[in-house]
Length: 302
Image 1: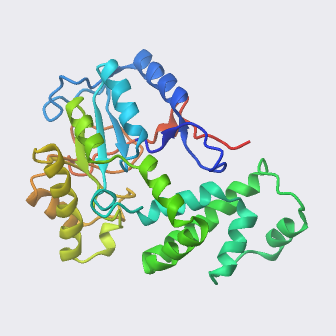
Image 2: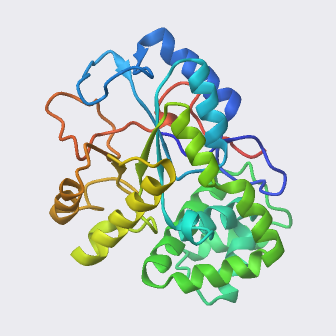
């Protein structure tokens, strides 16, 4: 499972990503271990414990570059793309959070949280550490711990009221800058069609990238169906693959599986660090994160 595969951007010094060169190193590492599911494979009939299958979530711009590289190596990739960014041409709330956290360090984020009256229940001694520092050292491990905690808070706020994240995002980024970032952040319809023509598999990833288990049956059906229909219209072919947003066994339920079956989804992917076996349910196939393997560690800011 992959998400961001890119190069360092000085405008987002704290952004977490896998460097493209490390991605290529990881592919070469995998090749030495086992084979890949290739472009000519019938994925529905071919189970082989000695093969790797690559998946890419969220429809980022750099995924087209990744797909071209995979094509050169005759490797198949599954690309799961939410619908909202295509139809509304706006950032998903989860990605707004990533961009905010990629631009600012912990002290700056704490001040932003205060401005928007978001409660931070820090222990006093942690707060004091940051207050005493005149210049924050981003090498400090506490930076990562604090940011993980802050991101958890903001994710929870977003689940309750997405307007808060939208307001913070608008405060952090001018509208003209948002348009420029958006253009270089997501795949557009032409890019998605190019992925399809390269032989890659295109799959849905819901419309708004929400936690499906927290939605009603009707809301889930709309989230899933709308994303499939948007993508199907672009590639002019039925979408038969899906990836459950966030992953884990608390983010979907029986209603989710029922809707996927109703939409004739053949394969749906989840997040669970284990191999895909013959006993695996094809509607929540487990996946390892790329950072669990050599060369897969995300970029650490210096």
